[in-house]
Length: 397
Length: 172
Image (tube, rainbow over the protein chains, first blue to last red):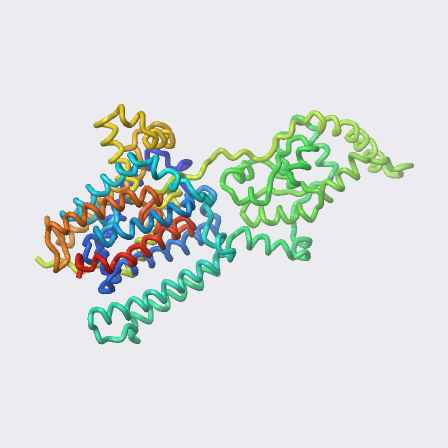
């Protein structure tokens, strides 16, 4: 599961990766024509919309691609850097950069590209940017109140707008397509080209088709959590889904057996209930933890039996189904849930006049368990919620 | 030899998008540029006036945030070094290497130099204030649908269109 840094790719190798990514980044920008200020500012005077086309296409491709990665569980978005929102510094900083764009003709990334192929104006621009950073550093006490004002954390746009992720992605792709069309009209007008901006050539048809496919594909990658929640809403489906179950007696036996280290118990009750009373060998777990890279690693441990417990068997079933759908193996649920466990073991009432041998044994075992387990529970120090040490990647400029 | 034509913008966009996906998948962060300029600037100040940096809040904060390691051991410094190499190679292949001062048709060299310098300074201040530039905040922010990145992006383009009229003599 991504991101590959720092587990699979170490921090030093990451620098090499950075270099390689940079080479591609620079080459693509240069090939697209971002190494000349005249082409870049064309966007603001209407004679060349290359920047808009490249930028918006890259944005929507990356957005849909990252959505797809998250949908298939290939990346844990909780670890990906989401630019924080400091409202006022973002707006004012942005406007200053916009002014810098029309005055200087570059943005930092493109100026590096242009400087690399010998544009003197770009080299001067970089010197300017250098001085600008130092001005900011020296004047930091003045900028600081603005810099740190209105901190909204790191929300994502669909959360801010209170719409679904897929709808937001769809809207952005539609806006992008509309802007490409509009840009062609403006561009032709400014440059005095008489051709219609949209012609029925195979090229344009293919381009439009790809755009529409991209827009619709947003709906193919709904947020995994949301789609899983929808799946387990159907009670009939949840109840008829085939899952491995563990009887309350086996569960009790495994808890009492100190040698048994094969069992891992995942307690899906609210943390408060867990803190009040927790089963030995158990850890508090949540629905969300199933989707995160670090907590879910516990479920990947080999040779362990993962028993999901909750008050009702229905909740256990729901969580176990989600876990199986996410590809986790060796999941079992406690038959009847903790309610049954309490009923049959902790509040055990012996069967009067046991008739069969089974009933005699059951009486004997449950009487023993009833005595021992409360002591184990009493002595058990709850492990608490899963520990997450991995932090978000620090990114941004 | 004549310059090769530029790549189709949509194709370039798709390639850039794929590169961004790979970057996020591998490193958990997006692309960037202004951060590297910051690292270089801080290193220069640190070398020239070490006593100054140890007593100024901004440098102290930076050093704290990056757990004291050198500002040059930074992901973006390596990435931007790559950008230099990549753009140079691309210019070499497409016959675009040329040491020139590029400017609009109705402007002088002096104005272009002053514009580039001041424009750069504005970007230096603005990208620090806005926590990223067109690559780090706008493009990468859009890819992860970050509100912060998208607000910055809208502000950059709004600002540029707002002031474009006043500087039209620079370009057209």
